[in-house]
Image 1 (cartoon, rainbow, N blue to C red):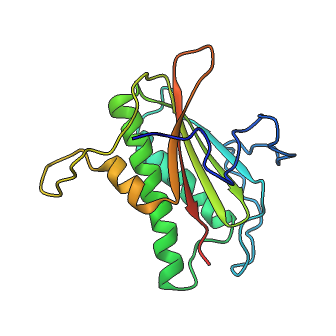
Image 2 (cartoon, one colour):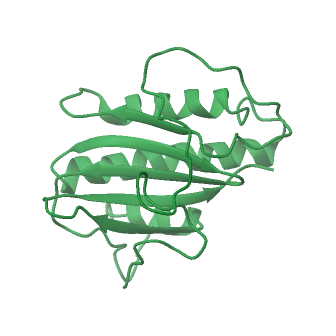
Length: 179
């Protein structure tokens, strides 16, 4: 399986040339921004960051953080079942990426959520050297090992970006915003 560092039309990593003027990252400060109207996508260029180094309960903490961002952006509470399913997909992918970093990447360093119009990009950085891949062939009856298969099925695209000049990587996944 090959991974593109960026899929066609995707968001470039923060700080890279061509990324445009993105809104400053919002740390996990607990302050809520006014929610976006329910019929509009999150404002383009919004970035949320959550440091996870040394944190306990990383997976539930990351899910709660993502849920708060979705609430702030007007994706939750959802207006209908389709929007609720899209938001739940985001939370599931966050859980899978953070869990994968815990199990195979030496623990996650940071979770980033970035919006660009109707696309939400999730990024989990860790210090691991391995490359996540869905197990092939996928066997639903096999215990464990389904995380990257789930990510692959739910996302528009996903991939791995290596850190230049340092150990580690960022695993990213892109999902559609609920309509």
